[in-house]
Amino acid sequence: MSAYFLLDPATGRLRFTATGRQALGPRFARAGIHLETLKTLAQARAAAAEVSHQEMQALAAELKGRDPVLDAVMAELPEWGD
Image (cartoon, rainbow, N blue to C red; front, side, top):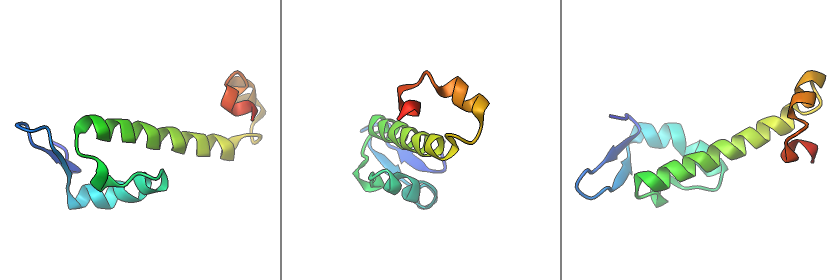
């Protein structure tokens, strides 16, 4: 079982623990997502995917232009050309 959330098997209701709120709250908030709005595991998974996507885009923007080899590999991605 996760230390970050509890899942009621009867209802499918999700609740973040204090540890989960502390660890994930700021990351999700940077993506505009508030943990208290996530009520199901499916919603939490979709939110986590969005958080990861935004974090990867930010990392790509930070790394772009630093390494010619990385730029060459990533050049095929539409997001890299922006």
